[in-house]
Length: 301
Length: 152
Ligand SMILES: [Zn+2]
Image (cartoon, rainbow over all chains, first blue to last red; front, side):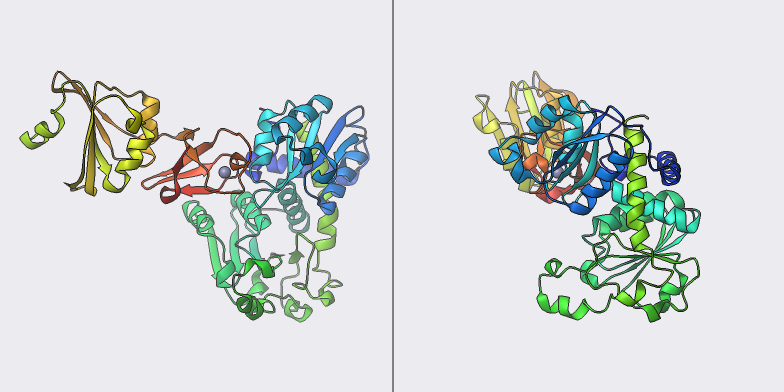
């Protein structure tokens, strides 16, 4: 077991979150370095995720590291029935760090326990995706200058969206006020409400997506996916309710920024893209710096 | 201790009486403890009146003294169970079954997409609530609630 692994956002304390974000800012100033020179990083993508993989591999390359691995399990021994345990043990003999994406929930935690080198979770099914959370936090920090006392509005699929849940947990260190805007079918799960109540975190729930967003510092948009609805008619009813259009932004705060984990479908109208409050493309670029900082911390560099 | 209770628990010479088992879990407790395969003499009563549980069950096992690990297993479905250790027809010791903080290798995670249900991984849970007992998987981080607890 290696405590340098990053499997769940809860593995970081508040201090560690701030430390990694400060490091990310340094990497943004000087992205190219030789911290990973002579090191081999295994990039194990048991399911394809081009966006996340390219972001990690760019981070590794900019730090001078070498990459081994596979981009989906059909090209690996996994298809021959090798267990995750055996694959992880074998790979951990070859490399200094493992970056892993796997469709099975809990796989990253398990891999971190059987591996001799740290494991960074690049997504384990519907469970955790901590590097996404760190890039979201970095984007919030960069645009707001702080993580403390912010009005965070989350919109769309708040039930299944793992990015929403992890961001909620991470921000809970920083005295936020949450506003959740979602159809009743996709409201924030009860477990998270209990968590917020226990920790005295203010939150409000809304089903209407209207000028309440004028109070927002951060507007975190997510996709409402058709396959989440048991009844297709229910989806038809709500699919156009949670779409952000440019004219909804006219009375929002100047410091407000719109985030989205990407890819989007239609939940942000294209006319928003040129609004200075749209931040989702820069947000994606921040992922490289956040991941460089996560890697440096995992290897104690 | 009143006379009636004395009679209930004193009917064996040496062994263990497990009291305050929720009536609906009697047969699960028997299975978990392997009493269905036991050579010891086992007697039980079910649907007895209980102020605490409504209906309860009692199991008496002669010449059997449980290890803590076995008691730990019972606590998952019978968190209020009490053990009376009987020696020479007398209650020599009482034990309260308390929920452990962690549950290792006993229960199954109810999430079919969890690694512990895909590969041979020993399950590990944190007990996040005692009554009703609620488990949080160390791996997939999903909740397995009281009603869905299955014993490995
Ligand atoms: Zn699990």
